[in-house]
Image 1 (tube, rainbow, N blue to C red):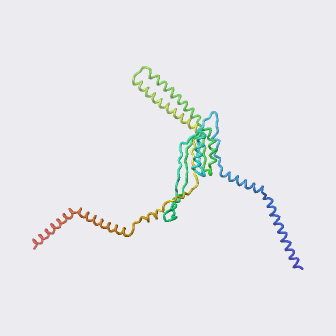
Image 2 (tube, one colour):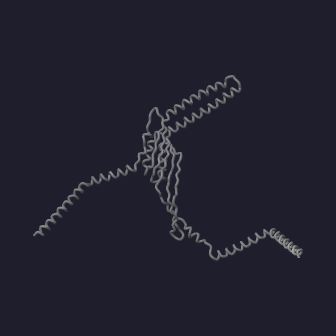
Image 3 (spheres, one colour):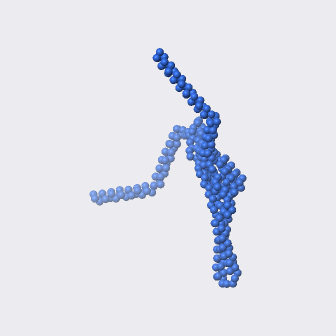
Length: 315
């Protein structure tokens, strides 16, 4: 009887534990409803987007003030899916905004190249490479912000983005005042050349006037250069893509070389012929030394004769 009660107690405990587990599972299922799961998926997507989307625009690109003049520059480096396609779209966008491209250096950098034999007469050359393009763009000042926003459609990963707006209002004012001053001095010098005076004095006045004219020209050029930099912002852009591999069918050069390799008997005959040519060269070289041989023979005979005469006298 006690044994029966003990077994009944165990069975009831197992049943209660199983019921609690099922209740917990159902509660978790209710908590993890489709709405919650969908919300979690949306949050994950938003997180992924926030990691790949970079803010390329800046207030430095579109800030304006009626009393201020800015020279705007931008320096960017980023990774794209295809350098060729992105280059085409970027250049088209620059043209659409009224800008122009001053440099576009597109190049492939091969860092690995290996050939694999696939048959007796053919092989596959696997070439690993990266493609990059360094571009210099001139964008109208009013369109710089639009261009930077448009670049966001091309980006896969941003290395860096630097945008700078230099206030050149005072520099322009200084150039204008300097230009007016030089013009006034130049005008006074021209008036002096028409007055009476010594020729040497007039020559000095003319020389000073030419120098002032040169300074005036330089100031005009500097002003035009600054105004051009204000009107068209300069963008230095580097785009690149991930490593790629190209499979190129080629001839199996190893088998191709073996195909035209010289046979044994022909190699042996060439060796004999080469040896004969070497012997002929040595004999011809010896013949070039005939004066030395003749002179040596004469010296040898003279020494021999001298020794014989010395031996007779001593005898």
